[in-house]
Image (cartoon, rainbow, N blue to C red; front, top):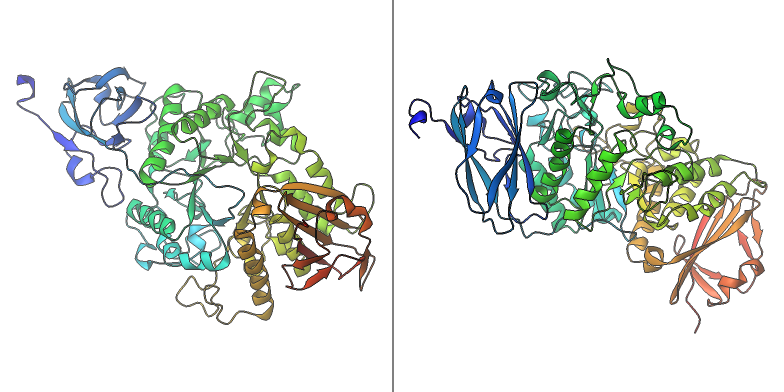
Length: 627
């Protein structure tokens, strides 16, 4: 140890005040950043990559003081002299404690790295068909702490009234309003990315991440986010974390001090993506198109991450595992799933599911046909050597069918609600179609009432289908209050949730000063959502559908002990009522009593004779199974 008499710098990585390391303690250290800040013993995967960044440390030699059950298995150096990637092997016998790393050479010092005991709290429980997920854009939902509207040192400040600006919403605002979700009937919350987006403009949305281990300080800090998760769990709510493996904000430290030219995809310069997920699956695709899809940039402010680089893959995968283990999140929504290297994404899903078998890992696969969507889902027998390990996806084809089917006034062989029927008839291409997350709108597309041309009755029919068809429903904040928004301009679908700011005169949380139309829509959503929470036949039942006739779509969800009949009447030929002969549905009705309860109106429905349907209305009829 004589070599260290002149300069022995000891520092401890501590997760404090939301930062991934204790800044004040390392300002004189040769290492300025370490990621992940700490890890755990007892993980299924014994391998750990530790990234060290600091001026010139790549020219130093790193060793570790002896620690039972932990060894350095490899040290990777890169083109930049400011990085070391240290690989540890942590044996199952290793105990919690502090490792001591020793740097010798140009950069000298000693640093301490903590291995923690795993937290016994429930984590990564996934969500099921019994759940309904509610998507929130944190910046636009509720301002719980105005003190973080402006954050010293960050590039973009708030609060702003500009559509692309920071409006001041934060995780504390969500935490303060958790009772609202229970009142509505929601079981699961999905927040757009909460990780740091320190970008000069349009940083509110969260998808240009500049620090994968740090919550955005405009939203609070890591402690505020972890507090939100804990309190949500106490309220019986699950939490889905939005993550991004495809790109990072160009203000990320890797972009400013690139470890190696292969960490970011340039070929050989910035090239935008062609946004063609089909190129990933197309048996006739050119290499050029496949390369542009996987290596092209999503946006010129979002550097494309090269997950095919093993160092990058380990770093990105570990960042996800770190949030699951430390934050106790329940699931992951993966942004732009088809865009990264698909073999990297297979590795990502496999490694995370190995640690947390109950996770869904639902991927955003924004494509318009069922076969292409299924290509990216686990257990598909694809024509080539690629077989996805991603368990579930968002069902964009079904979303399009619901919206286009309700908007289509034609009622013929392939139009109208037949579009929904036809889309579901292709479920045979999925191994487990009931695992798909189904939805009508999200933060990237027109809100439901706008997509359905302002028709509140069609909006209600869309919800009725969403909550009774196979799959796991997802809603978007504010749609329960009939909030409009045109998806052609993103900020138009990302407006503030009324009541989330101190000066709001209308308050959606309490119902104060809402219009009659808004109150009517909320009551409809609440009635159906609260019913669905306990409807096990919808959670677990089989689906039997009948070909729509005259734009009337009928289907059943059923188990041996329960049955629900759903009728969606979008008949445009009638202005008063539509006759629905029941003889056609005898194969299902023969198991039911002659009287059912319409859960929407609360009225009894006589099924001993043909029904007269009110125009533009959904019926959800609980049918006691006859004995």
